[in-house]
Image (cartoon, rainbow, N blue to C red; front, top):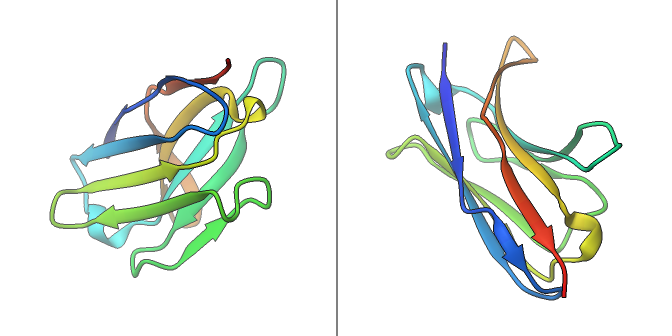
Length: 116
């Protein structure tokens, strides 16, 4: 099973930027779709962005134009660049990988707080 470790969360002011990273180990990373989800207090976990093994991306409407997801297969990492952050982006962000169309591994999560 793939192990995922996130990093890069923190506290940022509205309008600021953060870059989240997810390092994968223990599996065939380059063949797997990868994704970032987030969960705010009292809300369900939601898909933020997803990237296929070939680099095609999908973004939730709420982050489209502000977030960019990329992957580096040579380093088994994915990066989520988050710009123009808003208070409603505050959540725990989770990295995930898929197998047979379903999420089969989650990272431990990293907190992102957008506040002045």
